[in-house]
Length: 78
Image (spheres, rainbow, N blue to C red):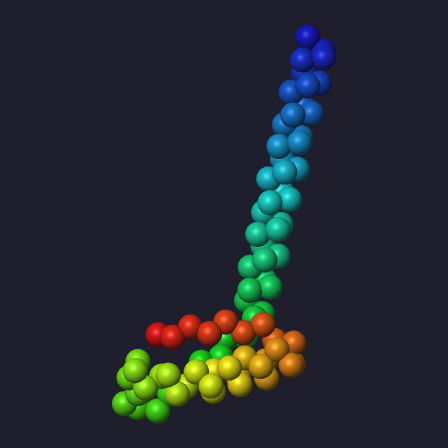
C-alpha cells in the first residue's frame, strides 16, 4: 500500500510541475508578444490592390531597413 501511495504522490507532483511550467511559459510568451510594437503604415486614399504593385518596392525597402536595425517585421495587407 505504501509504494502505491508514493507512486500516486509522485505522479500528482509531476503533473502539477508540468502544468505550472506550461502556464509560466504561456505567460512569458504573452508578455513578449505584448512588448512587440505594432506599426501600421497607411497608404494614400484611393489606392487599390492593383496599384499596390508599385508599393512592393517600398515594402522591400521598409523590410530591409527593419532587418538592418534588427527588427522582425511582418507585413500584412488589409
